[in-house]
Image 1 (tube, rainbow, N blue to C red):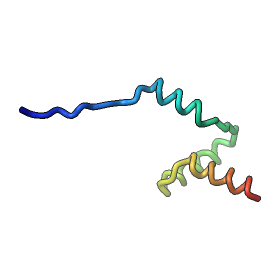
Image 2: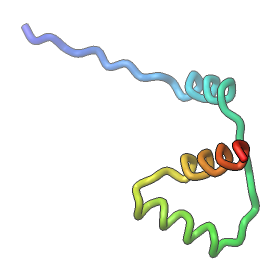
Image 3: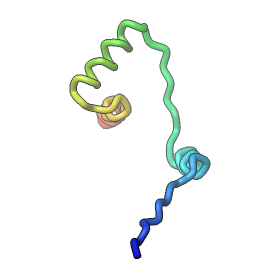
Image 4: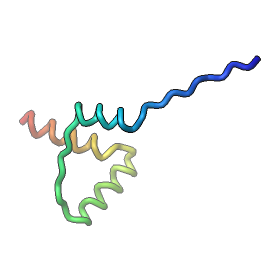
Length: 63
């Protein structure tokens, strides 16, 4: 007899509920060229855009 592994997934609704409870959104309107360069640099360096923004906010708050 072969033993099947049970696959479990978290529903999108559960993930969304958790994210809404724990996170907030910061939105900024920036020049397209600046955003394109930012996204490309993040991709090239293998770093998430959110982590760059989070670090910048933390550094600003610690001034």
